[in-house]
Length: 168
Image 1 (cartoon, one colour):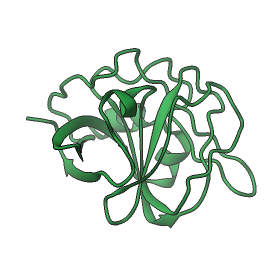
Image 2 (cartoon, rainbow, N blue to C red; image 1 turned 135 degrees about the horizontal axis):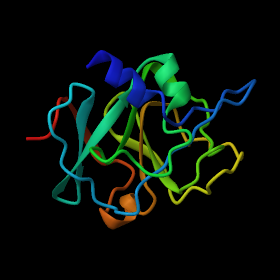
Image 3 (cartoon, one colour; image 1 turned 180 degrees about the vertical axis):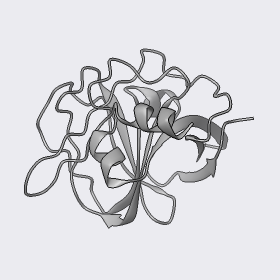
Image 4 (cartoon, one colour; image 1 turned 120 degrees about the horizontal axis):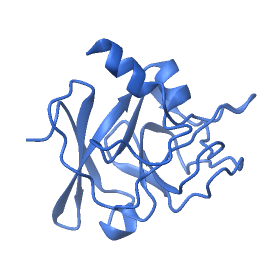
């Protein structure tokens, strides 16, 4: 299981560094809705409370420096069993993300330590090296297929709940 987890995380997206850009790439599938996840310890669920409804997204977790650096880089689509990648940082961050080596557009949803959406970068441009700076500091970032935020009514200020394990 651990070896499989390392393999899965070895294919990903990367946060751009302020001094030397890192790579933030991702590849969502064309579907805007996340499929159900079955039985992996390397997944979690991110649920948005948006406009009186809940939107659940099964995600891969990128919690270590290595996992965050790799992220979704080089993938042509999001993994079959998840709807996105959940980046977890040990402290609030101000660093930009970018789309270098990402072949498909993403929505990047920046979430503060209070678990509220603080910014959304919608429909990012594949393979772009433009640095995408969030409006304010963030603690988490969710990368999903481009169009996901608009389709599901996700907006700044929405509340986010994060839970370990596969969806039930």
